[in-house]
Length: 203
Image 1 (cartoon, one colour):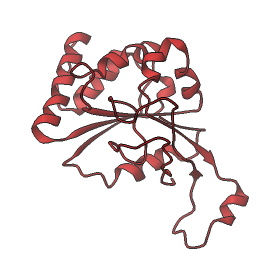
Image 2: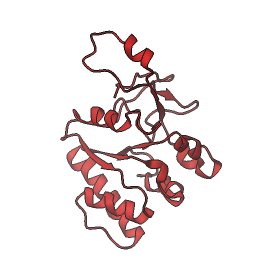
Image 3: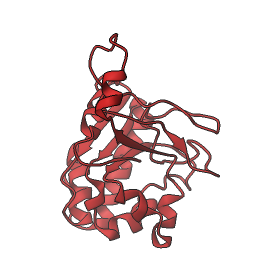
């Protein structure tokens, strides 16, 4: 999960992190239109995966998960779903999303999801009603604005000034990459040993 105030550079970070991903290993799907119902969100994912969306949610889930499994098993391609402006997602999406992420009794890691949004996203997902989803969050990172003093204090060797700085911090008690989770923004499918302290690329 990546959070930050509006204008801090979250989208620039996403572009930086995904631009060099091998397209033969990752299928990156970016979604920023989140103020719709949960079925519309899954239909958008289905279209991005090359599917004709079903009308019923049960059929939609089945088709999407079958396609994700096919990509992983047949082409060794990991699906990476980036949901920007995630603070606007409907509550029912958060409640049933853990069920959607369950592949083969939760034993396989076939899709990586990055939830990106404003700081209130993290506070919202800490509520008990979203405990099932929150338990899957592997890493949380928050971008902080760079002050003018910090900006001018940067070494002149930088090719471009950073918009924000942050460090990833692993949630206490979590085990990295045991399940499909929100991955560390540093790399989509990396494993790490606690404590996780990867520096995030600067946006």
